[in-house]
Length: 351
Length: 261
Image (cartoon, rainbow over all chains, first blue to last red; front, side):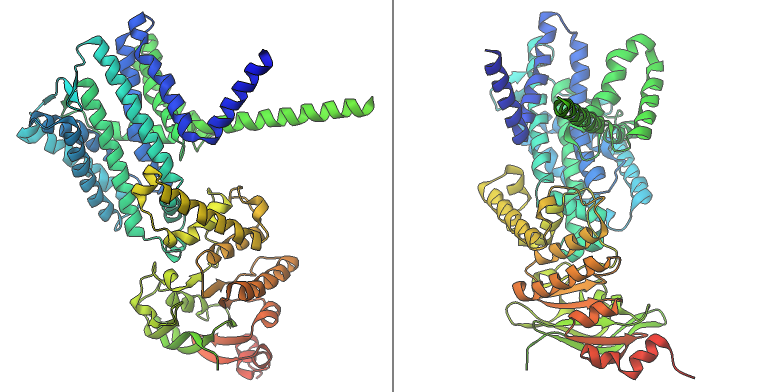
């Protein structure tokens, strides 16, 4: 009986290894359990909201990882695009468009702005690009606060109707759980999209471009095309993150999208793991989750000092991100296994 | 007479007041291995950069006969289009992607052979998957040819220099090249690796029907594998001929060893 169970488990882990998409789905399914916990009294609804934040940040940070980890580019304007997602969906829903169309329009418009930044990035690099995008973010925020269509302080979105059938309003507790599951589903889809991109010609071209642009060009990789691709992807991910914010919290503030958020997103990539999809989630969890879930209750505002120290420690010991701790654990395990096998062999020989 | 693959016609490249390449003309025949030699700073790499259109503001003309036997003016091509015509190069300081596997590094050489676009890749359509598998298999063949198939899944980072050079040559083979341009392929290799490289280059000519133009400072290597050698100094043509002729050419000796007073 035990042997059989072990066999099933082994087969399961093996197929997980072979099919990363199933891995993402299992991950999403496990995370979805959170949606039910508040109803059986294990978790507060506010805790679920913190985890919803982590999911939203993960989607945004995945886009930042394409930019930072794969393409060697940077943007400090990410917050502006999260805002574009949230406010965009608010405006279009306010006009009476169905949710799906509104989301599509928002993504297309924001993607267009991303393409403009991509064009701009051909002229500037490194720190100059960072400063330029910083002001793109600020300009966007100014637009949100000044232009009347965004309602001054923000837009109240209210219940959102999906597929023209189901209206979910976050006032109702069960609806909030359904919204959480929608968030997780979108995150899993975005993880798959990211996986498919980086394991394809596009991913290789992005990496070639960032590691050696002369070799990339000699191999036929157009720098223009792939800088645009990188920036459009990053803005689309950020905008989708913003849309998720809009549908979960069902309001879109105008003043919240500050540089602070853009920096937090970068920190998530750095701390979690460059080029790693799970690392990005881990980064979002460490940066947003740990202080808000536990530390804040214990230490109040001092908790940010702890997360600050944590970030510095991670950068010192794992410059490629926290997720690479796993690699070290694996290495240690194999070393141990090897040593153990050798020991066994030696004793067997002696006998 | 054999067909000419590459023809340089009075090519001049100027950086400010310095003429790095000055009215240089020479040609490479089909199936030929040509060495481009000259002392440091003679303008060899500049010639390569002109041919591959990294510099497009040279004077003179560079013609190339592509796979369709059309004689084209390379100036009409962008740097990223040169590879489609069948010219592919390596770099003096190996330019690979350290954090990709060797197999993926090689697959970049086939970048322009993909017909499917990013949306097909995101959705993993059947066609996209087939294409990826096809190119992966081709890359494995190339790696087998280069004798490094067994380490295909390792990162390029941390590999010995000899392997890095092999990966870079393997990457050029992915592009169905008609002319391979090698910038100091033997630099930094030990004697054994250099011998192996000579064998590989000869095999490339036979198996891939490609002409090869190479820069090299290892004269033994150049003399061994090149059919013809072109010597330049201060960007100017000195002589072209069989390795033996070049070795005994007074101008070449002067350029390398200096003039007897």
